[in-house]
Length: 236
Image 1 (cartoon, rainbow, N blue to C red):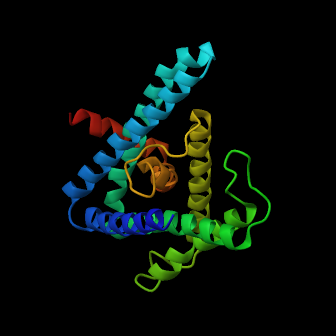
Image 2: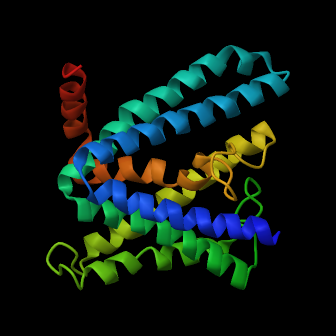
């Protein structure tokens, strides 16, 4: 147990430093990092769908499994990848700000959930509690409080900025529950073994993979997204 905790802590620090490095060093490093994340996330999602297909006797699911894998590909590469790379245009600090909201939301859910406990939030993920969910919402505004000291114009204490934090926290929590549901269907604890002490990459970015596209669409809307998508495809 102690060794697993040590692995988890070391992996968390390494991930955080890699995150800072990929965001702040240069655009090519950032886009390569996002691409690597997409490839691993797709591999793990296909792995989970394949396990469900193998274990189920539901013939309808077996027929639809290829469709589910294709939808995973479309979401990861045509929404998450495009939105994440386009979000970079808003500025590296803003990308870091969005990711910190996701991280603090996750930390808040874990800390408050473990400390307070109480009624379970859903049967899909037994470890999640209502108190943990509330903790996620409260902690999600912490990056806004920190960034306001750096730039009180773009990160002012406005209703819109507070709402963005809370909405991203909600999206992160729903993303976490969704991936938990898929793992529950596959009857596995982790989405993979990519990260020592953490399991798969999807186990760590289950909220982020939904939050980044939401943040970009929140700022730009679907019309802008399709324009960027068309421009991206035309470059290949």
